[in-house]
Length: 184
Figure 1 (cartoon, rainbow, N blue to C red):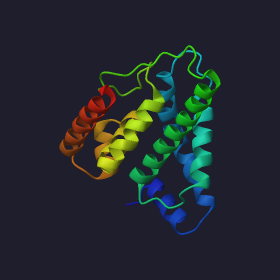
Figure 2 (figure 1 turned 90 degrees about the vertical axis):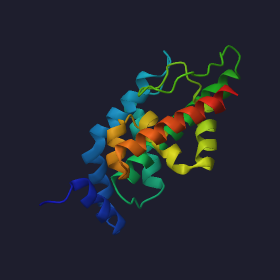
Figure 3 (figure 1 turned 180 degrees about the horizontal axis):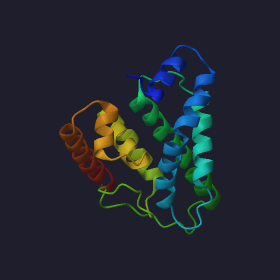
Figure 4 (figure 1 turned 30 degrees about the horizontal axis):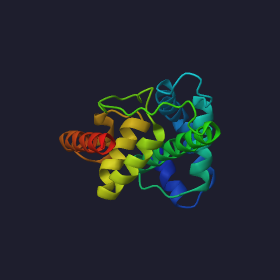
């Protein structure tokens, strides 16, 4: 049985093969683009960042940052986190330009969506996810994979090696925690 090509490339990267990273990104580019497209569909009209640019920016962050991944879940989690960071940086730049002059502060009331809420305050969500990570990194990772990565609960279970029932419980807890945090 031939090993998973993603797992094989991750092993090569961890072994120090710099060219394996390029091969890995080429192999999973479609999935990264799907993740970015899912995120961008939920952005407000007039958003200037495009899915391809989001993937490219995330690629640059991955290339410059952590170069060891312990498996697919770790890699896709890092990609989702990089996309989150790009969106946060973009939102901060826009917020700094506007100085909140005509910006409307909107919170979301229901996190039971796969695609982002188009009126979501990304900076507030980032603060909430950072606070959630201090409570339990596992919950924050599930939120990143689900919300920023666009993964289904079954995909998250597979990526993290946990049962679907555990992922569902963690997802329910994380949603409730974030709702309480952001409602306060």
